[in-house]
Length: 279
Image (cartoon, rainbow, N blue to C red; front, side, top):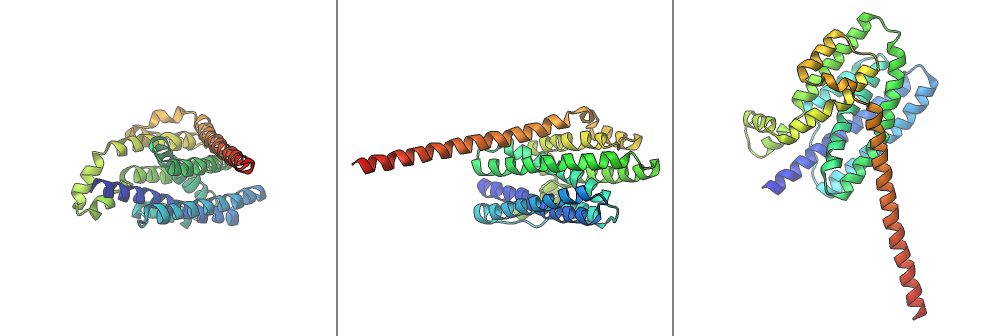
């Protein structure tokens, strides 16, 4: 039963990654359409391609390796819908590049750093390498734009961030996995709340989001109070650039290790062919 439960949890996690990447692809395409700057349109077009590639690899991993797919979590769907529903060009940036990508990077990084399975470790490391670029692009675009907004406009965006952060902290818990095993919803919620994995994930969740929100200029009193309430206010001083550069370095190290192993295999293959030829 424990092995099957682990398979269900892995399926739930990677299914939400897949649905998030599908949403990111749509958001990136929306940015191509709505953003006023031509350079931003060009970059968003490349991001749309990146997200399509991520969706493909997560889809293949779920179908070919785990053999199970979970539907999108209702609260993740709600956040994606809110992000896409707004007609202002900066809202897909804020919802996707800051909140949802920040959530994704925390989840990806946690599994990348704890799994002993080489395939998911490689997939997550390479996806995170792409996402680090996407977040950096969103930060630059929003930082410049938000300097021009009025206090009322900034407050509106801060409210969106506060609501999104509480939603991600309180509602993305995998309760539906336990319900699939016949555990009543209330008990499943209690079990999830006691999970060490969930506690660690919640702590890491905001390690990317809070410094990014502060960096782009959304740091009003109400938002600061919300982060104090969540116990993550101090993360505003985290070095986001350092975190992103570490993501890049991990992917590059995996590249070197992979290519070194492949080169060693190729040398052995050639050596064996030479030996057979000599015989």
